[in-house]
Structures are given as structure tokens and as C-alpha cells.
Amino acid sequence: MSEDEVHVRISSRFSTALLRRYVRSKLSTDPLYAAVADRLRDHGHPVVDVGCGMGLTECYLREHGYSGPIAGVDYDERKIAEASRVCASYADLEFAIADAVGAIRRGSSVLLLDVLHYLGSREQVQLLESCAEAVPVGGVVIIRDAVQDGSWRYRLTYFEETFALTVRWLKAARLNFPRRELVVEPFARRGFDVEVTPLWGRTPFNNYLFVFRRTASGRTNE
Image 1 (cartoon, helix red, strand yellow):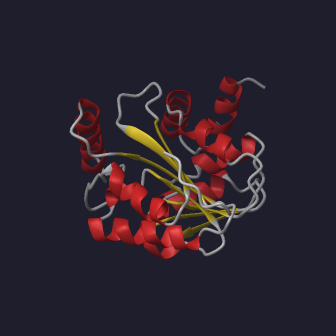
Image 2 (cartoon, rainbow, N blue to C red; image 1 turned 180 degrees about the vertical axis):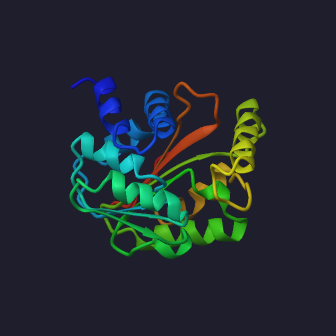
Image 3 (cartoon, rainbow, N blue to C red; image 1 turned 90 degrees about the vertical axis):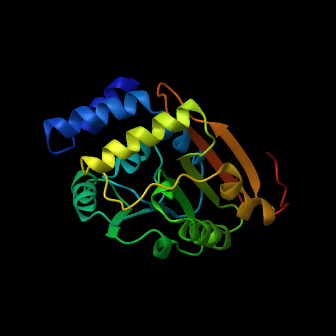
């Protein structure tokens, strides 16, 4: 099955024509899903997807062979309802309404995909510290977010996110894009392996992928 056929297969699960078009466009232009699937290949720990939205990441991972247990949490009840329906035929997935800071489970790896910039600065630090404390040896924290750096990509990202809040596609109270150093520090301090790479793909947005692995050796590479 080609990648385009997989996108069609996933998008067909969603409940309206508008959502199906959105999902297919998102999958074809955003490199996030392939990047996450690649980093979770042969991964052995349960995963908590904080801010899972409508379960698109879960669909992509299952369609690309990742079978580990995933708990998806989001505080938007509409999106959790859609995720539960869309992913009902997949095994070892669960979805629940919860806030980000309270969702971290000790012994699990964590996905934080486009979540941090909806939190206040204190909540960002608290969430990152919780992730760094909870992840076991061999576990991974994967974060995708736009970073605050003053670039044209950052300015365009801020405008696009502001529009999404205005039309109520996103349920959030604020925009607070983190600086790169804030994201890295809790993990570097604890000796995680650190990977930071641009994740722009075919989009103009200022997105970066942060991958933090807790290893027995405690090396930190950036």
C-alpha cells in the first residue's frame, strides 16, 4: 500500500467531509507523523500522547506497524470523542479527557506534539520536569513545537495559531511559544540523549522536533 493510499485509508475514518479533507492534507504536508513513527520503531514502553486531539497520530502509528499501548489524553472533549470513535478498531489504545500536567504516567514514554505553546511558562516548566522525571531508562520524550526565535517562520506560526484560536478550532486560552533552551534544559540536566532538528517539511511553520532518550550511559548529544 502506498503512502497516499494510507492517507486515504486514515482520512476515511473521520466523520465529516471537512475533517476528511483536513486529515488527508495534514498527513500529506506535515512530516511529524513519519518522524514520530521512525523514533518509536521497536520501542518497548507504553506511550502517553498528551494533547492527542482527534487521534491522528494513533491512526498513523497503527497503520505503520507500531502496536505498543498508547494512552491519548486531551482536555477538548469533542476531540476525545472523535478519537475514541475513529480509533475504535485498533487494539491497545485508550483516550481520556485530562489536562496536560496531570496526564504524565511514571514508566511511560511521552509525546508532546504541539502542546507546550498553549501553556503558561510555569506550566511548561512543570510539564517538562514531570516528563523528565517519569520516563524510564530506555524511554523517550518526543516533543514537536514551534520555538520563539524572532524568525519569519515564527511570526507566521504565531499568526496562524492566533487565527485557529479565533475561529475556535483550537480550545486554548493563550499562545506562549517556548524558547529552545527551555525545552532542552530539564533533559540535558538529567543526562538524556538530546536530538533537536527542524521539522518544517512542506509547511512554512517554525516547528522543531525534540527527541530526549533516557539511556543507561546518560550521554547528552545535541
